[in-house]
Amino acid sequence: MGNLLKIKTTSPKKATEGFTPHQFQRFVKLKESAIRRTRLTANFPQKRKTVLRIGAGFTLIEVLISVTVGVMILIIVYASFIAGQKLYHRGILNAELSQNGRIALDRMSRELRQTGQLTTVLSPTPLDPPQTEIAFEDGHIDTIQYIRYYLSGTDLKRDQGHYYFPSDPSSWVYYNAVDGGGNPAQYTIDSQQTIAQNISYINFYGEKTISIDLTLEKESRQIQFRTKNTGRNL
Image (tube, rainbow, N blue to C red):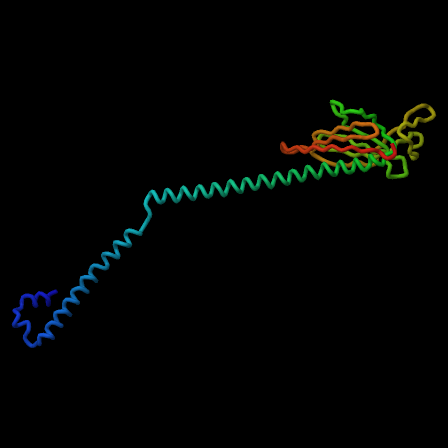
């Protein structure tokens, strides 16, 4: 800048001394080019600083929008997770109740089809309150043994036992046998087990064809079954 001022204040004659016209014009162009570069270099940091200042942060509205969108995404993900968990639990519950019901009905049906005699008198039609117990002779073995199914709370129980006279406990007799004094035979349980759980309702009815109505319930979920069995030896 100082040299430029000197050029402007120097008289034309002194400024051109020692230079040809062509050299003087080249000298002037070089000075003007240097001045322009100096001005650009001086302005560049200011422009760069301005750009950096503009992109340095977010406004309050942008932050609020970002937080709102993030919260909505979290809520959607959480709701989807909870729905999936409920669906999975419902499927497990249905499978558990269905399995319990099928196991109970399959076993009772198989044994009822083989029995030769019922010891429980059943109504031909459903009763209210329901008939929750049934006993019959075991048709799968050669010895005289009896099976009894009954509801105990929410558990379906199965007893297997035999009848005998106190005077001869080693001899097994029919359920309706009487001794010489007219005394009926006594019953003793040989084994007992739980066949199914979570049973809220069971009803046995029928004569030749025995019907079983069964309802299983857990956590307000219900599954109902109904089957009919015809005894081969009845």
